[in-house]
Length: 176
Image 1 (cartoon, rainbow, N blue to C red):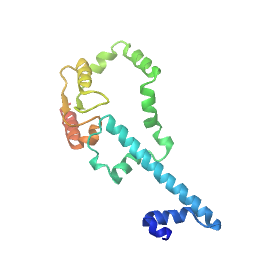
Image 2 (cartoon, rainbow, N blue to C red):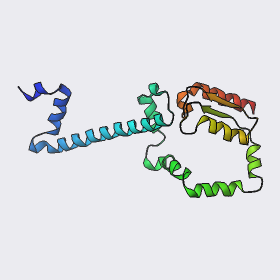
Image 3 (cartoon, rainbow, N blue to C red):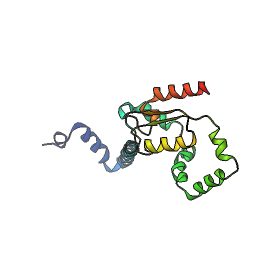
Image 4 (cartoon, rainbow, N blue to C red):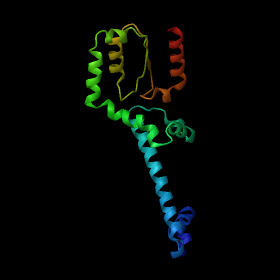
């Protein structure tokens, strides 16, 4: 029985490019690096989607190549995405809390924020910021402001209900 008959066709082709003759080892090395890169890319995508799903990304059916490209396009280099990478680190840093408390202690700061028009749109299935907590905090600052809780929607409202979120924001902007 030959090697080709024992392996599926795609595995057979892949193994041929990984196990080349001595004078073709550079091609094998490049092939191994390429396959490693693809495997790492898939692993990162699965990890990101898993984290998003964990905190409330409910509707993953529309995740396709265009969706991935759209999320990757604003950050063509690591330097371009420093803000996105730094935000989760900064939001939990003690310095951030100290700064927020310092700003809120300024005379009239809270009243100035309360004087601004506000609207809350939250997902009922949000596991990162539970709906009841978000609505409670929002109502403390803006008791009469509009609140919309979207059933079946998680933390990523812009992905789970983009048309509805856009319509609500447009309506709010027109009213203010």
